[in-house]
Image (cartoon, rainbow, N blue to C red; front, top):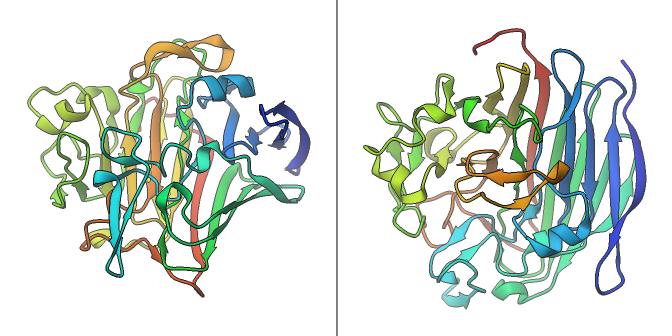
Length: 360
């Protein structure tokens, strides 16, 4: 099997004059991944179908300007705290920390200038990996403590792309990092939505949400509901089920699944996405306690991705391993606190392969 090779090039320049760097990790005959320093993001993933044809399977943009003009977290590292924090505030050790609200009155994915909008440094570049580094100062978007963060992406010879997140702090703070890649295994430019994909999620419970998409605090069994993906189900089969109030709230799926008992999960596979026509299959593994599944509900055909193709509702889906949303305010959720002397470490892996099956 051919070895993975890394290459480096200029992706663009920010208005400040800073260079944004692109790193490509590729294996001849396998997948090719392009990562950019802006947002420590997955900019492109090209994978072969059953006929060996390489297609783009992620949502991203060909130019830096497009990321600046229409920020949608595409492929980015999101933090300090991924997902939503109710009321854009939390209490830590008796002190209340107001945050930058950027979704109504709530904080989403770290705030208005979260990690997705930072130009990360290249810390290390090897044949099969790259490490992006970022320093988040004390008070950044309202979060306490100076945070040193690293994201190491690696592509191995088995077509497994992984990212390992590490972080340390000089004061008690909150950390919950994830990657916000959007996927369409049929091909981003092929004219087929992701609603025909089959999805499996290894979770017996999920977190119902209120009108503002903040979890209510309940851990609800998936059994007998449209949220039961323990066996493969076609995404589009139930995404518009009017009899499920939770789907009406978010205009589809935008919920967190609980991986293991109350989120006490050991590292392992947590989800699988499969496109029966192309044969492409993606298996996600993680040591995170939750998985946010978002069915692309708010793509509205106004912003183009790869190939200048307009993305519409359901064209792409996101599967984001992470801590529970609003864990900052719901103490019975797994803690996302990080103290000085500790190292935050979480891993997400995406393994790409092919299946001859026409159904899972």
